[in-house]
Length: 347
Image 1 (cartoon, helix red, strand yellow):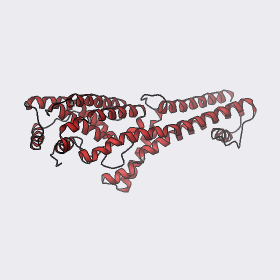
Image 2 (cartoon, helix red, strand yellow):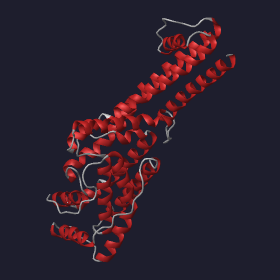
Image 3 (tube, helix red, strand yellow):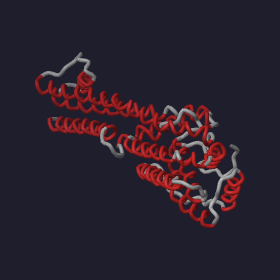
Image 4 (cartoon, one colour):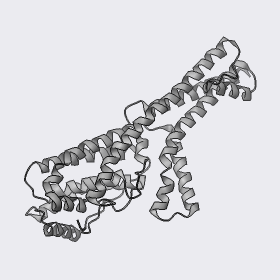
């Protein structure tokens, strides 16, 4: 019996350490680390998808109205799991120290963990464990409360550009509309002026979403909006700018810098979520559709490069870099609309 109590105490201590390390991995360490407690996200999203099927949600708006609760519920579920693990872990330690029933040990652990103070263990050893229990409990709660504003701030910065594209590129946005509207209303140079701003945005998104991967699953306020779709639109527009559009000034260099920053950000996130999404073959672009898009650009006055063969080769080479990555992320977060439309659109 004594050996059993020692083993239970060791197991309880390991459970407490696990919960504490998971909280540190999730909110403190400034890099993406796979959480063992990610089962919370899988469970929450699985239940919500089941509920959507039971409710008969067919349209995107109906499904989105249900799935929008997924990420917030999962984020709040993480500290619940950690606190529950800590409570049971310390209950095992109290049971090993006091020698009473395990139910009484759970009561003592809960009283200490949540600093309720209606029950306490006997002896100096029990008091020390109770102090540790209360300290870890308060620390976990303080950690979560402190980092919720951080997550909210990162989400707000991300959504600023997502919402901006609603008027600039349609809803859902697409690269053709983005280029056309800027050129028709004020000239392609107005689009070139925005690449540095969008470069800072995608770098921030890549850094915050890699450090706190739960942000990836937070949905935009509108069903037709998504950070993945917005990123795809900007990368596709940058590809057109670099491959097919001939315009003076530094816009080409600015578009290239955005392109490299955006590609690096999405590839980093794609690598982190490799356990959730699988690769697929690159979807080839139809040459006829590509030529129709260029013809439409010419109709609205966009100046194109003279060698269409070179433009086609450059466009396809770059598209092969980002298309499968963004497709995988879009399937992961259920991004709305077509990521790469080629139909002409009116300004």
